[in-house]
Length: 339
Image: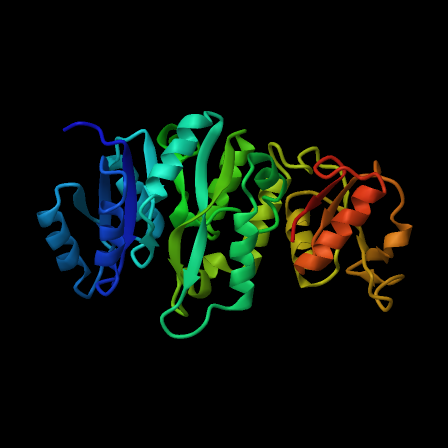
């Protein structure tokens, strides 16, 4: 059988109500030369039957048995079957717009330094409006359209929407594929690819309808809890291309829950946080778990260790970034945003 231009990996568990629409959105797109590897991951509803019917009606669909071993195992199972030079992701409850794969393949062909691209997304729910925080996240994603900017902001949040991504298979395999563990597998993969020097970016066009729901794994699975994201950040901040890979002490701007959690995991990685920076007058001049808290005015000039800006509020982080750059700090060299 000829090798298709792109293979799509689509895990599905108990998705009988949505998976047919997801698969058909791929099959009716502008790229006809594709193969969809749909993994039934232990469904107890009619998902397997829906997938079997789709495969019977279109030879580009192949159904694999994931045996209920979970998302990572399902993805790696499909990856082993995929022979295309490009591998795209898709979730069983999302909808690809017609030019999604075409635009992704065009970008990867034109930019050989890229390991993969994501896309801007349109969020939707069946039951109620999408939350403002998730809308803000989608807007942030849509701005990461250069590899340089995405690399610079990789420690803020996961910089790609997983089901929107199309990757070079050889880069994905070089990074070890998806790894299973007590951490977000997609974010760990993006950081691994970036740590190895591969480029990633998002396409500015909305090319995926991304469904939100209360039962989504990012809301229910402990691997996607804030603490596990912070653990993942600490691992990559302190290794390879990470700004703290040399083990030098650092300063953390933000002594709230995020800053303190990141500090805890940095200590586990052998990096000492020597001080916090805070604007809250009640915190300035105190110590938090033995670490002194200073004001922004006491920060001084760059060069005395690396500064991590761990502030989750987007407008506040933007103001801090602007202030630091105005004072001669260079992002990436002197400070890194790691909300």
